Length: 127
Image 1 (cartoon, one colour):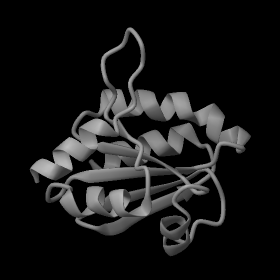
Image 2 (cartoon, rainbow, N blue to C red; image 1 turned 45 degrees about the vertical axis):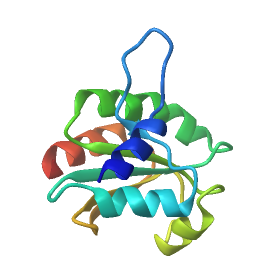
Image 3 (cartoon, rainbow, N blue to C red; image 1 turned 180 degrees about the vertical axis):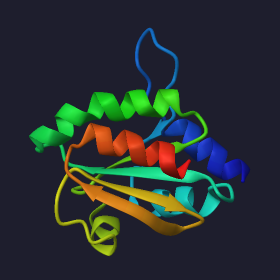
Image 4 (cartoon, helix red, strand yellow; image 1 turned 90 degrees about the vertical axis):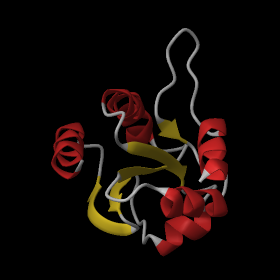
């Protein structure tokens, strides 16, 4: 558990002049698997499957980060499909952005597209 916390803290996104957001950016497939495995029981993980070349991904990114700040009891992950190819393939990602909602290691909901209203509603529903 301590290793998981250290890893998570090291991967947090930092913004100059702002407090840290609870947004994790796994550097590889193993790190993503570790975050999912080490999540607390019943804790919601929201995975943003994204790509640097994706316009809608860039548009929703600041809103996803704001959600991570608002919902400190939820773990938000930003996963680049070009970096985490194995995990993206296993997750069946065919469109970006896609959002997966995971509890206890199980997918409980997913949406594709940059729909902020639906994303926000699903975070509220599943947390």
